[in-house]
Picture 1: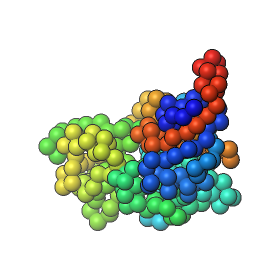
Picture 2: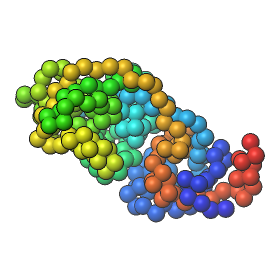
Picture 3: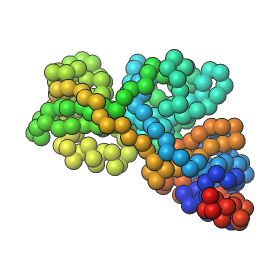
Picture 4: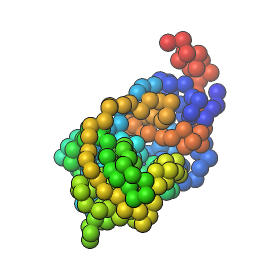
Length: 248
């Protein structure tokens, strides 16, 4: 039986038959996932937490969704999603599985292939209360705050690292098209001045499989793929596997 990864059964051995996107095929190859290789699609909720990491350009904040797209090659030889690293662990960026716009934004933060990386700590979900020029007071999820890059005086940083009460001039919005549209809908764009008022704890949440496809290699490496990326991965499996999966 053949299907794309999005509609493949969970918990059974899947053989990669074809990857229709050349860029994705190249990036998966960096992680040892090639045509003919075997993977398993996981049926689980994956809790993705915001992390603070240190790269070539200093400390940056990554939302769970951003961190889940970075595969780290640790100094001990393991390859794992950045969100599964423990504080103090070090290595380098093996691959960023995001699309072009977010990948370019990650590079601007100093997180591109082969860059050194260290996990500083895991952060609880937070909300950023800010005043936006021409918009008034808003609440930003940590993921949005991490995707807004600008300047406080002479210092360039993410809004997630902004200091309360200081003017922050937006220079760049990183992330995919959906993230950029969501941020633009708040009238946040290059040239706009923002001011952080406070940061508060936000409710915890889990990113379920319906929003991301999670796969595991036989070596135990877990990869988070968007569904449009999973649609590009064609797999084959035993005809009886789907029935057994649905029967559980």
